[in-house]
Length: 320
Image (cartoon, rainbow, N blue to C red):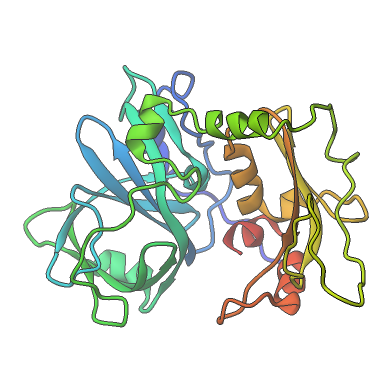
């Protein structure tokens, strides 16, 4: 067994020094007890941050932290747009889930949304690239895809350029959807405290939906039945039979639950779904759903779902 590596300089000391973590909603960052193994690739996040000046923050998982660049005009899929990216302090990995409002009087006060997130894959040695001032990588996000380059400008220590490389994801139209990939809110809506629940509650009242107290465990999942012929009947809704896990998803007292037919709660194994459940604007709710993992063609793949469900280590689950 290899000896535990001693921690070197704390990469998150600058992050903590700029923040009063007892007065901000941002995640804390404890000092490392051991040095992380040199690594790169995994999670990438782009925050849209309505601080004193609106900007975007590109964050790439590297060496156990999120290396971060502030991009004043935001990433662009147009190759003609060479966007300034200012290298800022490293952020903790937990920041990849952060979305909210940093209170006035704090560093970076303002609304923050997760504008995009996904996986990033280095195409060259990224640790060497950080030293030499050039990172070539792929992004696999909801909005940003394909090859990108970060190139350091010679005139300064922190100024880089974020450039889209030539591939099938290049677009002359630099406009991308403004909404969060977690909450569905634009940063202005988050700041204004938009009530997303009201239209749904009004619709339920209009439909005279019955009121009752029900826990996620008590809810019975809908199961399929065989019929000789298709039919239509008032009060019935129909759905496609997808190849996945039947689950009951919900939130109770602020905590997400994802129960299988056998009653096993697998929310911890699917944190991306748990985050989405917690982000929904309701105090308590239950969803009867099918959990699927699509293949390259967008079709549910039960084999991929089983492989995903077998991932158990916390770091691997977060990256999955």
